[in-house]
Length: 158
Image (cartoon, one colour):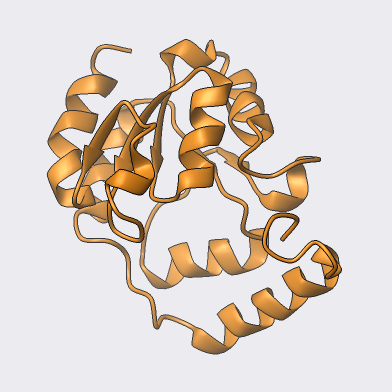
């Protein structure tokens, strides 16, 4: 909000966005391969870091029948959302790991920037933005399904 429309009240706009997400319900299914990847990660510590609000995000995971990790960082849990690294730094701290041992999966330029600023390895998914927009990432894949084998291999090394 600060970048796109600094004159608007971010708190009021978050409420509007949350209401829209509630109205949409399950209109946005999980990305292909998400259930399999998150199921495989149950053996590894992982976190959810999102600029979204807790209620709508949890509802989306529930509707998609996706597991949620123990560590969950939402937009309202940090002073500054992406592109600031606060969310990723907080998640790493709660996971008890240095950020350099964390892998961030992102589909937006601000998220990639936040992950890099936190000192994490960033795997980008060119699903909502072009690969060129995500060039700051360490790795980029066209989809989560194509990134999953790489992510699972990385999780075994952390």
